[in-house]
Image (cartoon, rainbow, N blue to C red; front, side, top):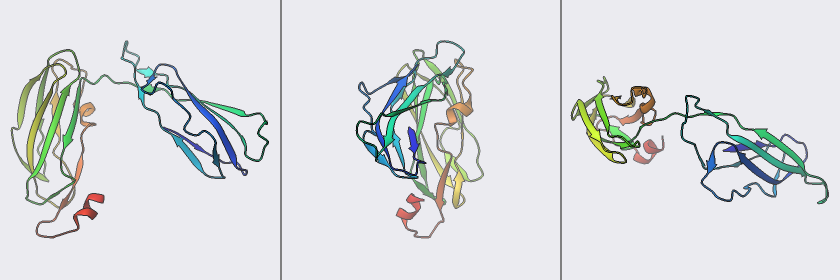
Length: 220
């Protein structure tokens, strides 16, 4: 996503914009300008959103150049035949990581003290190898849980494995969920911290016996 903010004291006409990619590709064959003929007053901003695909990692260098973003603009008060000013910005490099598993969790938007909170983990193997996965639920002062504490499974390439746990919150308020410890014997460079970034860390827990407004809690 690119953000443009006008600091000019005069209205600015954005005639067009373009994105030139170096190493990445776009899922949109014809990326048309989303800011074409947009007028910005002083302090106003406009944004464009692009969906990009990262290239596969080929070496140890995981820094990839994104590309350049260009905008053609002029004062709105200028005549239509006035020359356009071209502003080009070099986009920052991005860091790529090779993650063999994709993990996400399905869980309610909130829980209630001493009532079951079901959490279903989806573990997807995105490699061409059979992955051995060792998972353990770390103890938590804010939750009890039912389910296997230590699990060892094998997931075929392109397949998904699901694990269901029932957590029982012990305290009200925003609580840290029990964390998963994940070990991949065939991918020793992939750490638990890397995989945990896919998962939610906190959830709001209602006090027991109080009928609060569910919509307000979900919004919070």
